[in-house]
Image (tube, one colour):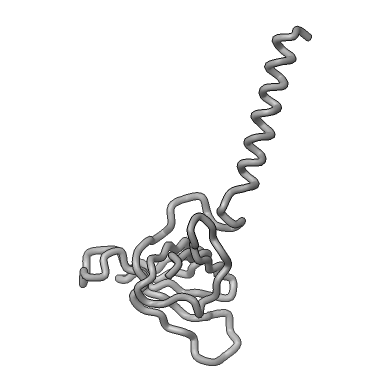
Length: 133
């Protein structure tokens, strides 16, 4: 193998290793989708599930433009035991709980399963990320 080919192979291997390290050091926890959220806006209502030991934790209403009575995106998002909730603090995400969600927070939600095309839409969240207070 020529010296030029060896140098090129070494460079490609170095770039591959650098890319792998960069991917491992991402601030995004496993399970947070790479695609755009299903909705991003402000939480305007939080409803906790009262009692019971079921799967449902409660729901949040996320509105793109809370001042709009109609016409802008709004989603009633169900939070279950399987929903992963995170708080964005600076450039990192930390795991959170349903109890840390409150009206006024900026939020992004990724839906899972069917979406009821009502107004507001109704869906189950796979992931919710909110901004730190």
